[in-house]
Amino acid sequence: MNAVSSYISSKRKVIGLTQQQIAEKLNVSFQAVSKWENGTTFPNTELLTDLSDLLGVTVDEMLRGKDSDNSGLTYSKAGVDIHFTDAIKREMNNSISTEHPRVLNGLCPLSIFWFDYTKDIVKNHVVSINYNEYPNEFRKDEYKGRSMLVKKINMLPVECIVRGYLAGSAWLEYIKTGCICEIQLPGGLRESQKFETPLFTTSIKAEIGQHDENVSFEKACDILGRDLAEKVKNKSIELYHKCADYALSKGIIIADTKFEFGLDENDELILGDEIFTPDSSRFCPLDKYEAGRVQDSFDKQFLRDWLKENGYISLAPPNLPENIIKITKYKYLDAYRILTGKQLDC
Image: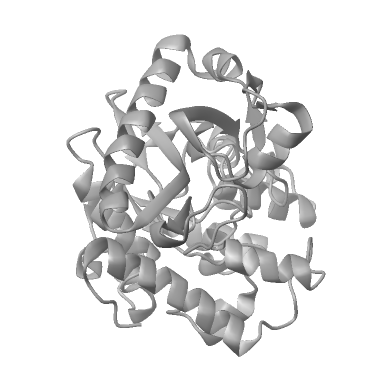
């Protein structure tokens, strides 16, 4: 089950309809509705509109039915998807997206940059970033710079994390247990300390509103099969090495990052979602790095810290202060500028 399928399922339950009743009202099979809700398939263009009307939501609301840690949403048509990269998570209040719709547009262009840079390591899902090639209903200014046309793939239920430094939740787990995802680490490590060898860990997606669940590599092997699990592990580490080295040459440390892979119709491994963005990675300025403390960052950690300091741990504030929005925007766009050598007009 993915974020959009979870949203469909939850909305159906809210209005009190069974999958069979949905099927009858839309004149489709029960199996079709079941597949929508388990993420195997997605409604076509006409059914998407009809289903939205039936559930009492707009198409856009349905497509935005994503959990707090998934920046992508997908629209399926003729074997390709529209993937909307939007940094507005649960903790990033709606005021950013409604009042400042282009604040975090750097995510999609930065992903495009990295997808092109890593295409020699693994194929990715990108088809086009030209919105004139999108289905008519998505040829709108609001999708410029924050969307891409991608190949439809079956996403793997396991997320891949590569950690080059002991930071964030990994640090908290380490000081509590001495381990990260059941991997025993040496004693006496300091916060933000660089690992001698990057650490590969895995997680599985949680239901909407819940945190992802960290799992051991052996558990990932049980879910994916050992051969596939080993393959995504090796590809993840190779991707991290290449891009972390590049970023370091530009003055940015990629402390950790997350990847999502899928399989195409030929069961070939495909890199999907977003990669090496301030949303999926922890970016730190090299010239200010010092082990033993929390690092300055170019990522969403700044906003998370502000929310935590102001008591917004599980609920979003009614509005974000203008200066907090501007600082967040600057951090994202500055990361893009440093890494690509280009400026974004946002």
